[in-house]
Image (cartoon, rainbow, N blue to C red; front, side, top):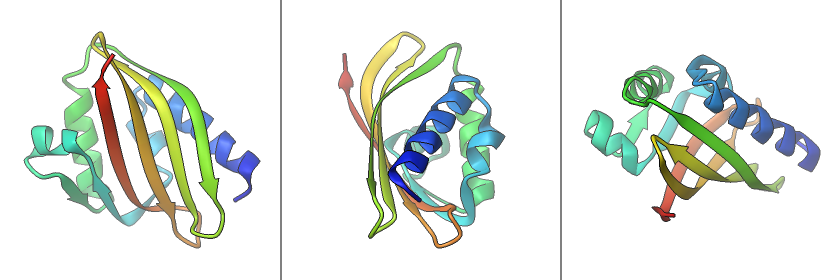
Length: 123
């Protein structure tokens, strides 16, 4: 992946979330993905979700309780050596705004094999 491709990925990822298009986001994830988020503990009782199907269930359950969601892409960091990307964005969910960073690691096939979400404080 090039720097330009990383930016395209992040723009598409943001657009998919803004449409609550869970399946479009999931299309970029490996079947055996390891996904860690503080929100997961609240929604499904564990901080780390294992596998694409479990991630699908978590995200679908989470978005079912959301009235409004809007992400604004701030910046994208890409390390081609480690195949790691950070997507930094402003998250506004049901009126709560915060800065968020998602750290994604890509496998050799271009799919996300692990991800971790870091939430900032409410703005």
